Length: 195
Image 1 (spheres, rainbow, N blue to C red):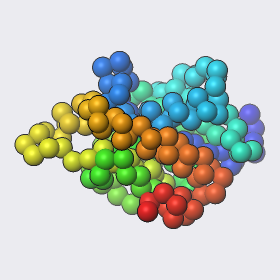
Image 2 (cartoon, rainbow, N blue to C red):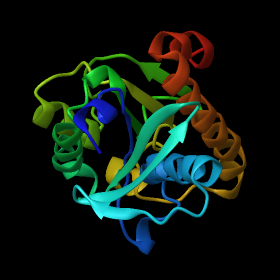
Image 3 (spheres, one colour):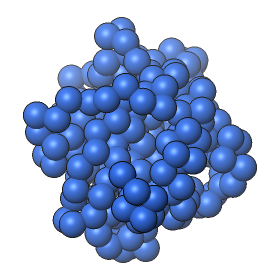
Image 4 (cartoon, one colour):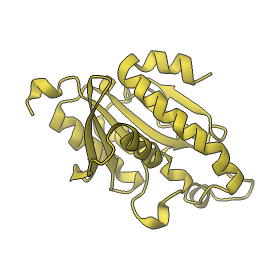
């Protein structure tokens, strides 16, 4: 694929931890959204092992896209994102990071064009390695840990049945938001999904 062909490629990164023990955990909502996008827009496509992660390439509404799930574990996600960004020479405005956020109420979505990591370790590593915070991101609220519960145990824990019933539709809406981001950009998504 030529550089010209990838100049406007959108890189969509879902954060999480690899391995069956982390499937369905609060920290893995980014992986889940990538799974929904792959099912909807690239059904049957086998992911390729690249950039210390798994990738799926496809076209969405006429736009070339690359889905990336880093398999480096959450706190080292930046290595995978940096490798993909540099390989395809992707501008930061064409990169979207999807991650969990315990500072947001459960199931709340928040698109942002730039800013700090807000304590999200995967996003923090990406910002550090890219050397810039002008990376669009979609944060998905997983709610605050109950009083007295340690944050790490909480984010690595699974949703309760009631929480899963609430987060499921939110993840579907997040996937819809990502498709809108590809076509219409971050400002549209902030106006539509952050309300």
